Length: 361
Image (tube, helix red, strand yellow):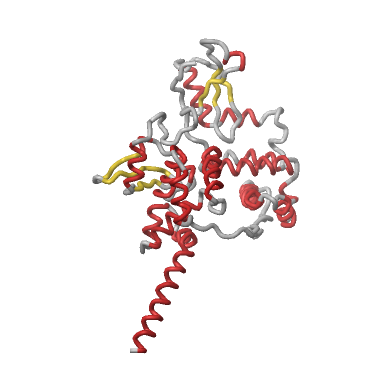
């Protein structure tokens, strides 16, 4: 089927049989995160009736009317199903970045499956703790359940369902895993010697820009923009929404980009160049090389630590480092505390030795 330029949130669905048919038209649907998928009554994009229907769907009114029917008896009940359906209509949920929304959706699906018919007002603090501890084997998810259910309870308070948030003050579980450390220089060089193609390009982009992996996977060729003769990359961070321009001074990376064939809008593409390289695919490809060089202890996110630590060792301030990584001063301090300590210790010992030398003369 020929690619067509459809309005935002509109897609054309083909049945398995239609996919095998040449010239199959399919059916137009409106699909937006947090709302039920809606079939267009008018299937002609050029028809004014389609535009009117599209405008109504953008307001969300038609979706809410569908939810509030006898086919959805839980809509007006005070249970978690109704609370979640109400929350995903709020501006707060709609403003979530894609990755955050995905994490929220996963937790809300769990909460709805586990406590869907329960009344939130019956929940106590110990229920929240029990839910958290039941997921302790997946530490990040366990902590996310506390975070998301706390937000849901706040929404219940806004709706007038309850006056107290039982999740407020419930702590997150701290990991026993060793703190993440930057890549040692010898392993950086080992990776460069072993990797080729997109595995090498991904590694160098991560290290040079100090960005999260998803932000780097989203890089497009059109994002490369020189300013005053310096080549750089424009981006908007997925997690924070911050717009950044990161200069690239490393000639080896510029040469690598110049020698990379443009097979798609994205710099790093999937195997068939039909779209961007997936997070999972990229992580697994890097992990394969990490195992070959003995770098299992240093994951792909540690390259973000490496970039921040290299700038800290160069004597740059936390504010200057944050201008590159997009992090808050508190997070920059967290990332660079190990190398800052080593640098301060080195200066202290050097000063002590110098003083001892002067006292002996």
